[in-house]
Amino acid sequence: MNLHSLQIDSESFQKGLINIGMFVDATLRASELEGSVKEELGKQSEFARLIMTSILRAMTLGSFEAIEFFPRLLQLLSEYPELHQNCIKLLDDCPCWMFLRWLPQLTAQLDKSSGSVLLPLISRIAKRFPNALRYPLSISCEQYSFSSDMSRNEQAVERIKRIVQSDSYDRLALELRRLEDPVHVFKDLCDRFESLIGPSLPTKKVAMKQAYAEFKQICLEQRQAGLLIKKFAEKHTTKIAGICGSGDTLDAKKLKELVSYRDKFGAEAESKPGKNLLKSFSVWLDEYQSANVNAASQLEIPGQYTGDFDHNPADHVKISSFDANVLVMSSMRRPKKIVMVGTDEKEYPWLVKGGEDLRLDQRIEQMFGIMNELMLRNPYCARNRISLATYKVIPMSTSLGIIEWVDGTKPLKSCLSESPLFEKRFQDSLSAYGEFVQRHGKSGQSFVASYDLFLQTASSKNVIDNIRSIWNKNRDSYLREFFIKLTRSPEAFFHIRSEFANSLSALNICSYFLGIGGRHLDNFLVDLKSGRIVGIDFGHAFG
Image 1 (cartoon, rainbow, N blue to C red):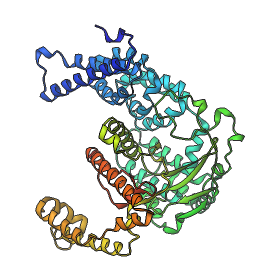
Image 2 (cartoon, rainbow, N blue to C red):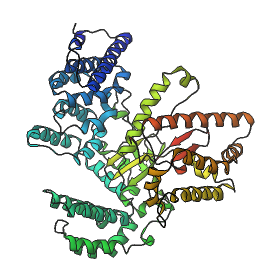
Image 3 (tube, rainbow, N blue to C red):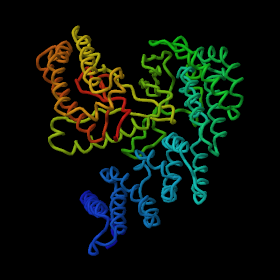
Image 4 (cartoon, helix red, strand yellow):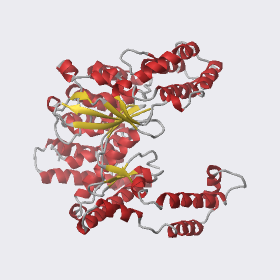
Protein backbone atom coordinates (compact mmCIF):
# COMPACT_ATOMS: atom_id res chain seq x y z
CA MET A 1 0.00 0.00 0.00
CA ASN A 2 1.34 3.43 -0.95
CA LEU A 3 0.73 5.72 2.06
CA HIS A 4 1.49 8.77 -0.04
CA SER A 5 -1.42 8.07 -2.39
CA LEU A 6 -4.01 8.02 0.39
CA GLN A 7 -6.14 11.14 0.79
CA ILE A 8 -7.65 10.55 4.24
CA ASP A 9 -7.50 13.85 6.06
CA SER A 10 -8.20 12.86 9.64
CA GLU A 11 -6.48 13.36 12.97
CA SER A 12 -6.43 9.61 13.62
CA PHE A 13 -4.70 8.96 10.29
CA GLN A 14 -2.11 11.63 11.08
CA LYS A 15 -1.49 9.98 14.44
CA GLY A 16 -1.20 6.59 12.78
CA LEU A 17 1.42 7.88 10.35
CA ILE A 18 3.44 9.38 13.21
CA ASN A 19 3.21 6.15 15.22
CA ILE A 20 4.49 4.18 12.22
CA GLY A 21 7.34 6.63 11.75
CA MET A 22 8.34 6.58 15.42
CA PHE A 23 8.13 2.78 15.68
CA VAL A 24 10.26 2.25 12.59
CA ASP A 25 12.70 4.91 13.77
CA ALA A 26 13.15 3.11 17.10
CA THR A 27 13.83 -0.09 15.14
CA LEU A 28 16.31 1.71 12.87
CA ARG A 29 18.17 3.28 15.81
CA ALA A 30 18.44 -0.13 17.48
CA SER A 31 19.77 -1.70 14.28
CA GLU A 32 22.31 1.11 13.83
CA LEU A 33 23.59 0.54 17.36
CA GLU A 34 24.05 -3.16 16.58
CA GLY A 35 25.97 -2.30 13.43
CA SER A 36 23.94 -4.64 11.25
CA VAL A 37 20.37 -5.55 10.49
CA LYS A 38 18.86 -9.00 10.58
CA GLU A 39 17.80 -10.23 7.14
CA GLU A 40 14.12 -10.50 8.09
CA LEU A 41 13.97 -6.81 9.07
CA GLY A 42 15.03 -5.56 5.66
CA LYS A 43 17.54 -2.88 4.81
CA GLN A 44 18.17 0.21 6.92
CA SER A 45 17.51 2.47 3.93
CA GLU A 46 14.01 1.00 3.62
CA PHE A 47 13.38 1.83 7.26
CA ALA A 48 14.60 5.38 6.63
CA ARG A 49 12.37 5.66 3.55
CA LEU A 50 9.29 4.57 5.52
CA ILE A 51 10.10 7.05 8.32
CA MET A 52 10.50 9.85 5.77
CA THR A 53 7.26 8.98 3.98
CA SER A 54 5.21 8.63 7.17
CA ILE A 55 6.35 11.87 8.82
CA LEU A 56 6.23 14.07 5.71
CA ARG A 57 2.80 12.69 4.78
CA ALA A 58 1.61 13.57 8.30
CA MET A 59 2.99 17.08 7.80
CA THR A 60 1.15 17.34 4.48
CA LEU A 61 -2.05 16.58 6.38
CA GLY A 62 -1.29 19.35 8.89
CA SER A 63 0.19 17.46 11.85
CA PHE A 64 1.99 19.73 14.32
CA GLU A 65 3.45 16.73 16.12
CA ALA A 66 5.14 15.65 12.89
CA ILE A 67 6.85 19.06 12.60
CA GLU A 68 8.76 18.33 15.81
CA PHE A 69 10.19 15.20 14.18
CA PHE A 70 11.66 17.03 11.17
CA PRO A 71 15.27 17.44 12.44
CA ARG A 72 15.49 13.63 12.54
CA LEU A 73 14.55 13.60 8.86
CA LEU A 74 17.42 15.97 8.09
CA GLN A 75 19.76 13.51 9.78
CA LEU A 76 18.36 10.64 7.70
CA LEU A 77 18.81 12.69 4.52
CA SER A 78 22.49 13.08 5.31
CA GLU A 79 22.99 9.41 6.15
CA TYR A 80 20.93 7.87 3.32
CA PRO A 81 21.56 9.63 -0.04
CA GLU A 82 19.33 7.06 -1.79
CA LEU A 83 16.32 8.84 -0.21
CA HIS A 84 16.99 12.14 -1.95
CA GLN A 85 14.84 11.71 -5.06
CA ASN A 86 11.83 10.42 -3.14
CA CYS A 87 12.13 13.19 -0.56
CA ILE A 88 12.00 16.03 -3.11
CA LYS A 89 8.44 15.02 -4.10
CA LEU A 90 7.35 14.54 -0.48
CA LEU A 91 8.70 17.96 0.54
CA ASP A 92 7.02 19.59 -2.44
CA ASP A 93 3.61 18.46 -1.11
CA CYS A 94 4.20 19.98 2.36
CA PRO A 95 3.12 23.58 3.09
CA CYS A 96 6.35 25.58 3.34
CA TRP A 97 5.21 27.51 6.46
CA MET A 98 5.50 24.29 8.47
CA PHE A 99 9.30 24.48 8.14
CA LEU A 100 9.75 28.04 9.43
CA ARG A 101 10.81 26.98 12.94
CA TRP A 102 13.61 24.84 11.44
CA LEU A 103 15.11 27.42 9.07
CA PRO A 104 18.54 27.54 10.83
CA GLN A 105 18.82 23.75 10.53
CA LEU A 106 17.64 23.78 6.90
CA THR A 107 19.98 26.52 5.69
CA ALA A 108 22.96 24.85 7.38
CA GLN A 109 22.59 21.89 4.96
CA LEU A 110 22.74 23.75 1.65
CA ASP A 111 26.46 23.23 0.97
CA LYS A 112 26.08 19.46 1.47
CA SER A 113 24.71 16.77 -0.84
CA SER A 114 21.37 16.85 1.00
CA GLY A 115 21.14 20.54 0.13
CA SER A 116 20.03 19.71 -3.41
CA VAL A 117 16.93 18.09 -1.90
CA LEU A 118 16.18 21.09 0.31
CA LEU A 119 16.85 23.90 -2.19
CA PRO A 120 13.40 23.74 -3.89
CA LEU A 121 11.79 24.05 -0.44
CA ILE A 122 14.09 26.93 0.53
CA SER A 123 13.23 28.68 -2.76
CA ARG A 124 9.52 28.43 -1.95
CA ILE A 125 10.15 29.86 1.52
CA ALA A 126 12.25 32.69 0.06
CA LYS A 127 9.41 33.76 -2.22
CA ARG A 128 6.67 33.57 0.43
CA PHE A 129 8.59 34.52 3.60
CA PRO A 130 11.78 36.37 2.62
CA ASN A 131 11.98 38.16 5.97
CA ALA A 132 11.92 34.84 7.84
CA LEU A 133 14.74 33.38 5.76
CA ARG A 134 17.03 36.41 5.50
CA TYR A 135 19.05 36.15 8.71
CA PRO A 136 19.28 32.31 8.99
CA LEU A 137 20.54 32.17 5.41
CA SER A 138 22.98 35.03 5.96
CA ILE A 139 24.47 33.30 9.01
CA SER A 140 24.78 29.97 7.20
CA CYS A 141 26.46 31.68 4.25
CA GLU A 142 29.27 32.72 6.61
CA GLN A 143 29.97 29.02 7.22
CA TYR A 144 29.48 27.51 3.75
CA SER A 145 32.32 25.64 2.05
CA PHE A 146 31.08 24.42 -1.33
CA SER A 147 33.09 21.62 -2.91
CA SER A 148 33.59 21.50 -6.68
CA ASP A 149 30.71 19.03 -7.15
CA MET A 150 28.35 21.36 -5.24
CA SER A 151 28.54 24.23 -7.76
CA ARG A 152 24.83 23.93 -8.65
CA ASN A 153 23.94 24.28 -4.98
CA GLU A 154 26.19 27.33 -4.73
CA GLN A 155 24.51 28.96 -7.75
CA ALA A 156 21.05 28.21 -6.32
CA VAL A 157 22.04 29.77 -2.97
CA GLU A 158 23.18 32.91 -4.78
CA ARG A 159 19.79 33.15 -6.51
CA ILE A 160 17.99 32.76 -3.19
CA LYS A 161 20.22 35.42 -1.61
CA ARG A 162 19.14 37.85 -4.31
CA ILE A 163 15.47 37.08 -3.57
CA VAL A 164 15.76 37.80 0.17
CA GLN A 165 18.23 40.69 -0.06
CA SER A 166 16.93 43.93 1.45
CA ASP A 167 18.75 47.22 1.87
CA SER A 168 16.49 48.23 4.76
CA TYR A 169 17.17 45.04 6.76
CA ASP A 170 20.89 45.27 6.01
CA ARG A 171 20.84 48.82 7.33
CA LEU A 172 18.96 47.73 10.47
CA ALA A 173 21.63 45.10 11.20
CA LEU A 174 24.39 47.69 10.69
CA GLU A 175 22.79 50.23 13.01
CA LEU A 176 22.10 47.63 15.70
CA ARG A 177 25.76 46.63 15.51
CA ARG A 178 26.60 50.30 16.10
CA LEU A 179 24.94 50.03 19.49
CA GLU A 180 27.96 47.99 20.54
CA ASP A 181 30.78 50.06 22.01
CA PRO A 182 33.33 50.69 19.21
CA VAL A 183 36.19 49.71 21.52
CA HIS A 184 34.70 46.20 21.72
CA VAL A 185 34.26 46.00 17.94
CA PHE A 186 37.91 47.02 17.57
CA LYS A 187 39.04 44.34 20.02
CA ASP A 188 37.02 41.77 18.06
CA LEU A 189 38.80 42.91 14.88
CA CYS A 190 42.19 42.32 16.50
CA ASP A 191 41.10 38.86 17.66
CA ARG A 192 39.87 38.08 14.14
CA PHE A 193 43.20 39.19 12.63
CA GLU A 194 45.11 37.08 15.15
CA SER A 195 43.10 33.98 14.19
CA LEU A 196 43.72 34.57 10.47
CA ILE A 197 47.30 35.75 10.27
CA GLY A 198 48.93 32.53 11.49
CA PRO A 199 47.42 29.78 9.28
CA SER A 200 48.23 29.68 5.58
CA LEU A 201 44.68 29.73 4.26
CA PRO A 202 43.83 30.31 0.57
CA THR A 203 41.08 32.80 1.53
CA LYS A 204 43.04 34.52 4.32
CA LYS A 205 43.56 37.85 2.55
CA VAL A 206 39.93 38.02 1.46
CA ALA A 207 38.73 37.26 5.00
CA MET A 208 41.05 39.89 6.52
CA LYS A 209 39.91 42.50 4.01
CA GLN A 210 36.24 41.71 4.72
CA ALA A 211 36.80 41.87 8.48
CA TYR A 212 38.42 45.30 8.23
CA ALA A 213 35.75 46.59 5.82
CA GLU A 214 33.02 45.57 8.27
CA PHE A 215 34.82 47.23 11.18
CA LYS A 216 35.37 50.38 9.12
CA GLN A 217 31.69 50.56 8.19
CA ILE A 218 30.59 50.18 11.82
CA CYS A 219 33.15 52.32 13.65
CA LEU A 220 34.92 54.69 11.26
CA GLU A 221 32.21 55.91 8.88
CA GLN A 222 30.48 58.83 10.55
CA ARG A 223 27.42 59.29 8.33
CA GLN A 224 24.35 59.05 10.62
CA ALA A 225 26.55 57.55 13.33
CA GLY A 226 26.01 58.47 16.96
CA LEU A 227 28.23 60.69 19.08
CA LEU A 228 30.07 57.73 20.63
CA ILE A 229 31.19 56.40 17.23
CA LYS A 230 32.03 59.89 15.94
CA LYS A 231 34.32 60.49 18.90
CA PHE A 232 35.97 57.11 18.38
CA ALA A 233 36.42 57.72 14.65
CA GLU A 234 37.86 61.22 15.11
CA LYS A 235 40.35 59.99 17.71
CA HIS A 236 41.46 56.67 16.21
CA THR A 237 40.80 56.55 12.43
CA THR A 238 44.19 57.91 11.37
CA LYS A 239 46.16 55.49 13.56
CA ILE A 240 44.07 52.37 12.83
CA ALA A 241 43.86 53.04 9.08
CA GLY A 242 47.60 53.70 8.98
CA ILE A 243 48.33 50.30 10.48
CA CYS A 244 45.66 48.25 8.69
CA GLY A 245 45.64 49.74 5.22
CA SER A 246 42.89 47.83 3.46
CA GLY A 247 43.21 44.91 5.88
CA ASP A 248 44.68 42.32 3.54
CA THR A 249 48.27 43.65 3.79
CA LEU A 250 48.52 43.26 7.56
CA ASP A 251 51.50 41.18 8.68
CA ALA A 252 52.66 39.92 12.10
CA LYS A 253 54.64 43.08 12.81
CA LYS A 254 51.71 45.39 12.05
CA LEU A 255 49.34 43.14 14.02
CA LYS A 256 51.60 43.46 17.06
CA GLU A 257 51.45 47.25 16.68
CA LEU A 258 47.65 47.13 16.35
CA VAL A 259 47.27 44.94 19.46
CA SER A 260 49.60 47.25 21.40
CA TYR A 261 47.39 50.20 20.41
CA ARG A 262 44.26 48.24 21.42
CA ASP A 263 45.68 47.43 24.85
CA LYS A 264 46.00 51.13 25.68
CA PHE A 265 42.21 51.53 25.65
CA GLY A 266 40.82 51.86 29.17
CA ALA A 267 37.36 51.82 30.71
CA GLU A 268 36.85 55.45 29.70
CA ALA A 269 36.39 54.24 26.11
CA GLU A 270 33.23 52.32 27.07
CA SER A 271 29.69 53.62 27.37
CA LYS A 272 28.46 54.18 30.90
CA PRO A 273 25.80 51.83 32.29
CA GLY A 274 22.33 53.30 32.73
CA LYS A 275 19.94 55.27 30.57
CA ASN A 276 21.40 56.92 27.44
CA LEU A 277 20.01 58.58 24.34
CA LEU A 278 19.62 56.32 21.31
CA LYS A 279 21.01 59.06 19.04
CA SER A 280 24.30 58.84 20.94
CA PHE A 281 24.77 55.47 19.23
CA SER A 282 22.73 55.67 16.01
CA VAL A 283 21.09 58.71 14.45
CA TRP A 284 19.45 56.45 11.86
CA LEU A 285 17.61 54.40 14.49
CA ASP A 286 16.63 57.51 16.40
CA GLU A 287 15.15 59.17 13.31
CA TYR A 288 13.49 56.07 11.83
CA GLN A 289 9.75 56.49 11.14
CA SER A 290 7.78 53.93 9.16
CA ALA A 291 5.60 56.71 7.78
CA ASN A 292 8.65 57.99 5.88
CA VAL A 293 9.44 54.58 4.34
CA ASN A 294 7.70 52.98 1.37
CA ALA A 295 5.65 49.88 2.20
CA ALA A 296 8.07 47.44 0.56
CA SER A 297 10.96 48.68 2.74
CA GLN A 298 9.16 48.74 6.07
CA LEU A 299 10.72 46.65 8.84
CA GLU A 300 8.80 43.94 10.67
CA ILE A 301 8.90 43.53 14.44
CA PRO A 302 11.25 40.51 14.79
CA GLY A 303 10.14 37.08 15.98
CA GLN A 304 6.74 36.81 14.29
CA TYR A 305 7.52 33.77 12.12
CA THR A 306 6.78 31.08 14.70
CA GLY A 307 5.83 28.33 12.25
CA ASP A 308 2.66 27.58 14.23
CA PHE A 309 0.33 28.60 11.40
CA ASP A 310 0.33 29.82 7.81
CA HIS A 311 1.62 33.37 8.14
CA ASN A 312 0.51 36.30 6.02
CA PRO A 313 3.43 38.78 6.11
CA ALA A 314 1.07 41.62 5.16
CA ASP A 315 -0.62 41.19 8.56
CA HIS A 316 2.60 41.33 10.55
CA VAL A 317 3.28 44.23 12.88
CA LYS A 318 5.86 46.67 11.50
CA ILE A 319 8.34 48.86 13.37
CA SER A 320 6.82 52.32 13.59
CA SER A 321 9.78 53.90 15.42
CA PHE A 322 12.35 53.33 18.14
CA ASP A 323 12.14 54.73 21.65
CA ALA A 324 14.50 57.68 22.10
CA ASN A 325 16.19 56.08 25.12
CA VAL A 326 18.48 53.07 25.37
CA LEU A 327 19.48 51.25 28.57
CA VAL A 328 23.16 50.28 28.75
CA MET A 329 23.70 47.15 30.85
CA SER A 330 26.65 46.81 33.21
CA SER A 331 27.96 43.43 31.98
CA MET A 332 31.30 43.20 30.22
CA ARG A 333 30.26 43.90 26.61
CA ARG A 334 27.68 46.54 27.58
CA PRO A 335 24.60 45.06 25.83
CA LYS A 336 21.82 47.57 25.18
CA LYS A 337 18.10 47.41 25.81
CA ILE A 338 16.10 49.14 23.07
CA VAL A 339 12.36 49.46 22.57
CA MET A 340 10.71 49.08 19.17
CA VAL A 341 7.34 50.79 18.85
CA GLY A 342 5.03 48.75 16.62
CA THR A 343 2.41 49.90 14.16
CA ASP A 344 -0.06 48.31 16.59
CA GLU A 345 1.03 51.01 19.11
CA LYS A 346 2.56 48.39 21.42
CA GLU A 347 6.13 48.48 22.71
CA TYR A 348 8.53 45.60 22.00
CA PRO A 349 11.66 45.67 24.18
CA TRP A 350 14.79 43.79 23.05
CA LEU A 351 18.30 43.26 24.36
CA VAL A 352 20.86 43.89 21.61
CA LYS A 353 24.03 41.82 21.97
CA GLY A 354 26.94 42.62 19.67
CA GLY A 355 30.08 40.51 19.36
CA GLU A 356 28.21 37.35 20.41
CA ASP A 357 26.90 34.36 18.49
CA LEU A 358 23.40 33.68 19.82
CA ARG A 359 22.71 30.53 17.83
CA LEU A 360 23.24 28.28 20.85
CA ASP A 361 20.73 30.31 22.89
CA GLN A 362 18.31 30.07 19.97
CA ARG A 363 18.67 26.29 19.80
CA ILE A 364 18.07 25.98 23.55
CA GLU A 365 14.89 28.05 23.32
CA GLN A 366 13.78 25.88 20.38
CA MET A 367 14.30 22.75 22.46
CA PHE A 368 12.50 24.30 25.43
CA GLY A 369 9.55 25.03 23.15
CA ILE A 370 9.39 21.40 22.03
CA MET A 371 9.69 20.21 25.63
CA ASN A 372 6.78 22.49 26.57
CA GLU A 373 4.65 20.88 23.88
CA LEU A 374 5.52 17.43 25.24
CA MET A 375 4.72 18.50 28.82
CA LEU A 376 1.42 19.98 27.68
CA ARG A 377 0.38 16.53 26.48
CA ASN A 378 1.13 15.05 29.90
CA PRO A 379 -1.96 15.24 32.17
CA TYR A 380 0.03 15.89 35.38
CA CYS A 381 2.14 18.66 33.83
CA ALA A 382 -0.89 20.24 32.18
CA ARG A 383 -2.91 20.13 35.41
CA ASN A 384 -0.11 21.68 37.48
CA ARG A 385 0.96 24.20 34.79
CA ILE A 386 4.47 22.73 34.68
CA SER A 387 6.34 24.26 31.79
CA LEU A 388 9.44 26.24 30.85
CA ALA A 389 9.43 30.01 30.43
CA THR A 390 10.74 30.84 26.94
CA TYR A 391 11.61 33.99 25.04
CA LYS A 392 12.57 34.84 21.47
CA VAL A 393 16.20 34.81 20.35
CA ILE A 394 16.99 36.26 16.91
CA PRO A 395 20.59 35.76 15.69
CA MET A 396 21.21 38.26 12.88
CA SER A 397 24.82 37.26 12.18
CA THR A 398 27.53 35.30 13.96
CA SER A 399 28.39 38.50 15.84
CA LEU A 400 25.00 40.15 16.36
CA GLY A 401 21.65 39.14 17.76
CA ILE A 402 18.67 40.36 19.74
CA ILE A 403 16.90 38.73 22.68
CA GLU A 404 13.33 39.38 23.73
CA TRP A 405 13.39 41.41 26.95
CA VAL A 406 11.49 39.64 29.73
CA ASP A 407 9.69 42.40 31.63
CA GLY A 408 8.76 42.17 35.31
CA THR A 409 11.67 39.95 36.29
CA LYS A 410 14.66 40.18 38.62
CA PRO A 411 17.89 38.13 38.73
CA LEU A 412 17.74 35.42 41.38
CA LYS A 413 20.92 36.70 43.01
CA SER A 414 19.40 40.19 43.34
CA CYS A 415 16.33 38.65 45.01
CA LEU A 416 18.52 36.84 47.55
CA SER A 417 20.71 39.91 48.07
CA GLU A 418 17.79 41.83 49.51
CA SER A 419 18.57 39.98 52.73
CA PRO A 420 21.38 41.90 54.51
CA LEU A 421 23.11 38.65 55.54
CA PHE A 422 23.20 37.01 52.13
CA GLU A 423 26.07 38.78 50.35
CA LYS A 424 28.66 38.21 53.08
CA ARG A 425 27.71 34.57 53.58
CA PHE A 426 27.67 34.01 49.84
CA GLN A 427 31.23 35.35 49.52
CA ASP A 428 32.32 33.28 52.54
CA SER A 429 30.86 30.19 50.86
CA LEU A 430 32.72 30.92 47.62
CA SER A 431 35.95 31.33 49.57
CA ALA A 432 35.38 28.06 51.47
CA TYR A 433 34.77 26.19 48.24
CA GLY A 434 37.82 27.80 46.61
CA GLU A 435 40.03 26.74 49.52
CA PHE A 436 38.65 23.19 49.28
CA VAL A 437 39.51 23.03 45.56
CA GLN A 438 42.98 24.51 46.01
CA ARG A 439 43.85 21.95 48.69
CA HIS A 440 43.83 19.39 45.86
CA GLY A 441 46.24 21.45 43.75
CA LYS A 442 49.89 22.23 44.08
CA SER A 443 51.15 24.87 46.48
CA GLY A 444 50.73 28.39 45.12
CA GLN A 445 48.48 27.36 42.25
CA SER A 446 45.46 29.47 41.35
CA PHE A 447 41.89 28.19 41.64
CA VAL A 448 41.69 27.56 37.87
CA ALA A 449 45.01 25.68 37.81
CA SER A 450 44.01 23.61 40.83
CA TYR A 451 40.63 22.69 39.40
CA ASP A 452 41.98 20.09 36.93
CA LEU A 453 43.76 18.21 39.72
CA PHE A 454 40.67 18.58 41.90
CA LEU A 455 38.54 16.84 39.25
CA GLN A 456 41.05 14.01 39.01
CA THR A 457 41.74 13.39 42.69
CA ALA A 458 38.77 14.50 44.84
CA SER A 459 36.50 11.69 46.00
CA SER A 460 32.74 12.05 45.64
CA LYS A 461 32.37 11.65 49.43
CA ASN A 462 34.74 14.59 50.13
CA VAL A 463 32.96 16.79 47.60
CA ILE A 464 29.52 15.98 49.04
CA ASP A 465 30.72 16.53 52.60
CA ASN A 466 32.20 19.91 51.64
CA ILE A 467 29.02 21.07 49.89
CA ARG A 468 26.93 19.97 52.88
CA SER A 469 29.26 21.82 55.23
CA ILE A 470 28.86 25.02 53.21
CA TRP A 471 25.11 24.48 52.92
CA ASN A 472 24.73 24.09 56.69
CA LYS A 473 26.21 27.56 57.17
CA ASN A 474 23.58 29.04 54.82
CA ARG A 475 20.32 27.68 56.14
CA ASP A 476 18.62 31.06 56.44
CA SER A 477 15.57 31.36 54.18
CA TYR A 478 16.69 34.27 51.99
CA LEU A 479 14.32 33.43 49.16
CA ARG A 480 11.41 32.90 51.55
CA GLU A 481 12.03 36.36 52.98
CA PHE A 482 11.94 37.82 49.47
CA PHE A 483 8.68 36.07 48.54
CA ILE A 484 7.04 37.21 51.78
CA LYS A 485 7.92 40.82 50.92
CA LEU A 486 6.58 40.26 47.42
CA THR A 487 3.15 39.00 48.49
CA ARG A 488 0.28 40.45 50.49
CA SER A 489 -1.47 37.31 51.69
CA PRO A 490 -0.64 33.72 52.71
CA GLU A 491 -2.51 32.44 49.65
CA ALA A 492 -0.37 34.57 47.31
CA PHE A 493 2.81 33.41 49.05
CA PHE A 494 1.94 29.72 48.68
CA HIS A 495 0.97 30.25 45.03
CA ILE A 496 4.26 32.00 44.21
CA ARG A 497 6.26 29.38 46.11
CA SER A 498 4.52 26.58 44.23
CA GLU A 499 5.08 28.24 40.84
CA PHE A 500 8.76 28.81 41.68
CA ALA A 501 9.26 25.17 42.72
CA ASN A 502 7.43 23.74 39.70
CA SER A 503 9.23 25.93 37.17
CA LEU A 504 12.65 25.39 38.77
CA SER A 505 12.14 21.61 38.79
CA ALA A 506 11.13 21.61 35.12
CA LEU A 507 14.08 23.82 34.19
CA ASN A 508 16.59 21.67 36.08
CA ILE A 509 15.35 18.42 34.55
CA CYS A 510 15.27 19.80 30.99
CA SER A 511 18.67 21.47 31.46
CA TYR A 512 20.09 18.10 32.51
CA PHE A 513 18.74 16.46 29.34
CA LEU A 514 20.31 19.18 27.19
CA GLY A 515 23.68 19.13 28.98
CA ILE A 516 23.38 22.76 30.07
CA GLY A 517 26.17 23.83 32.41
CA GLY A 518 28.07 26.88 33.62
CA ARG A 519 25.10 28.14 35.65
CA HIS A 520 25.20 30.78 38.38
CA LEU A 521 22.64 32.89 40.24
CA ASP A 522 22.58 35.62 37.59
CA ASN A 523 21.56 33.04 34.96
CA PHE A 524 18.08 32.83 36.49
CA LEU A 525 15.34 35.46 36.48
CA VAL A 526 12.38 35.42 38.85
CA ASP A 527 9.03 36.58 37.49
CA LEU A 528 7.84 39.06 40.12
CA LYS A 529 4.16 38.41 39.39
CA SER A 530 4.06 34.63 39.25
CA GLY A 531 7.27 33.54 40.97
CA ARG A 532 8.22 31.41 37.97
CA ILE A 533 11.90 31.00 37.14
CA VAL A 534 13.32 31.96 33.72
CA GLY A 535 16.66 30.55 32.53
CA ILE A 536 18.92 32.87 30.50
CA ASP A 537 22.44 32.98 28.96
CA PHE A 538 23.07 29.41 27.82
CA GLY A 539 26.76 29.58 27.00
CA HIS A 540 27.44 25.90 27.73
CA ALA A 541 25.07 23.23 26.44
CA PHE A 542 24.88 19.84 24.73
CA GLY A 543 28.01 18.89 26.69
